[in-house]
Image 1 (cartoon, rainbow, N blue to C red):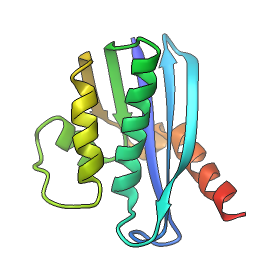
Image 2: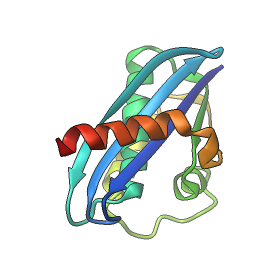
Image 3: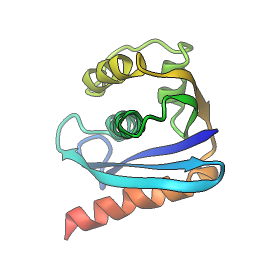
Length: 138
């Protein structure tokens, strides 16, 4: 079982601030990889943009490492999880371009689940996205 924790952050204002993302990949409770980076800043950048950037980056990493089955993507973003599970419609937002890329990459995966988790269960990815923000501000 592959577990992927993702997070997006926009500070000091959301939307319109500096947006970062992070993800952490575990296989059988052993950490395989972690990654965090800046997405961008200014008009249109939001937590949702960061969440979808995290998902896309994680999926690309999984694909590059031939990990395409038995995956659980865990996020504290109800928007992302509900949209990926087809519960909520996609209406508008700057994240839609990234969502379209996610859908294309997802064609390479089998048996992938999207699970909402409380923020308290996503502390590692949250910390990494915050660290990316702090590095960028310096």
